[in-house]
Length: 267
Image 1: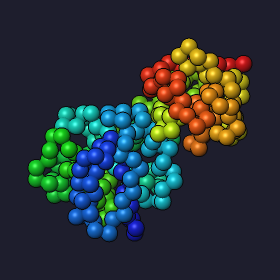
Image 2 (image 1 turned 180 degrees about the vertical axis):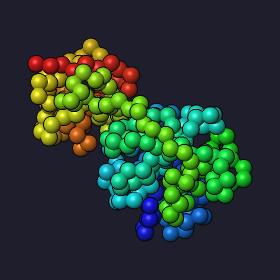
Image 3 (image 1 turned 90 degrees about the vertical axis):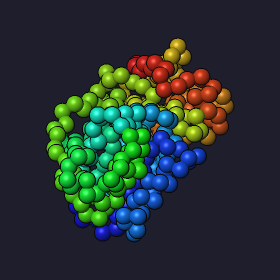
């Protein structure tokens, strides 16, 4: 893939307190000084692969064509887990083979991925001589992303593998019986679910959500229209149903986290 104006988007759980994100950027810029780097976020909850998968899915469509996404939430770093790359019609994605790319691969109907062969002669020429067992972001993902931005082909980095393990990630009209769950809690405390809404409200036949023991059936079109201190349901900017409380953190008020069970209430 020819990339005339290379751009790499980073998504990690490294945070901004430590030097890890900066070291990845420095490594990439040493290889490709003209590279543009965009931070999707470095504040994924540590080891929260599901949250990272959602944040990537909700972001990638808004990036210019030929963007490269380097995504590192990697509890298995240094083990035998694979690193995979995927090419769609518009973008390239690199991530550990741990489910982080699943929603994007499902959305884009990707039929095969490239399994990166770290020990191949091709890669040995692109990577540093010593690769840390604890920081593949700096030593593998960063240099590979930079070399991809300079025109190295993804298929030259490894071998192809069929994708036949993806399950629909959302509750929608086509998959109404999928398991509803919390994908993300944003910094405002809004609880983002995997339930797809219509443009101005709930899907046909949906009454509300039962979150733990609490039933939520009040729908709003915008935050300002919500009554004070009342948990409400709204279709958020990603098209997914969110649980919100006006000017407050719904997650804190309802004392929930990603593991709270959820049921779709139907009419």
